[in-house]
Amino acid sequence: MKHRFAVVAAIGATIALCSAGIHAAGHSGDKDFPGMVLEEGQTMADVGRGERLSRPAPLALEALQSDDQVSVELADMIVLKPVAVEPDVGVVFYHGAETDPRVYGRPLRALAEAGYLVVAVTMPRYLAVMAPDKADEVLAAFPGIESWTIIGHSMGGAMAAKYAYEHPDKVNGVLLWDAYPPRDVDLTDAVFVVGQIYRTGRDGEVPDNFRKAEHLLPDGALLTAIPDGEHTYFGDYILASHRPVPTTSLTVDEQLEVVVLATLGFLNIVEAQVN
Image 1: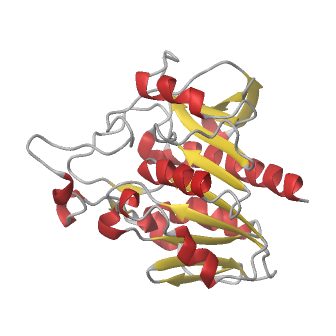
Image 2: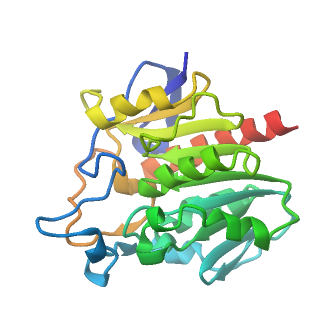
């Protein structure tokens, strides 16, 4: 049986974890890549253009400033490194479709503050599907890291799953933020740790795309549900005009605290299995 938890964020960001059989809620998007919405008459050649790009809100940019806790390098790779320790465990991050990777500044900084090297890549045309092996560049650039986990949001999560599936010897964990594996990526026999953090609706209904992808996850997958969560609250977005306005009862801060805590819990489990 998959390890499924419901995560409830209450007023004041009080978080309770309890066992539950709650499934992910749906959102508009491509059947294989949640979050990828093509407008009428649009083709894949049109995506990733400026007017369709979601950009980082000020809080995300503030999180990407170096200080005495975290050093930050902003280039094609966004590198966040804890100052007080020399990390030997790393995280590769794949951003969502048509999303500036700086959007995820706050949650990624929280991982670096916890002692992890965090490297967020920038995908061609801001689409992970165009460079699913981008993690190879990160691993080559940081040969001193002994253990890697790959994390991705939305389309980035789908491509993170693909990378882990095709390179099981290179990663020890894959964590999907509001995403699921593509249809040809079967993780049921994965030798690495598999996790998923995802939204539920207020009614707890399972959308067809998530339900149909459940069989691609192993029985031991670590799954965390966020009741009434929001797809774009995995970061701090200035949404492109084609993105729907969020209607969740949660605030961005409440959901991000859930995401960070669940992600750190997942990374601890990965480390424990490696050691």
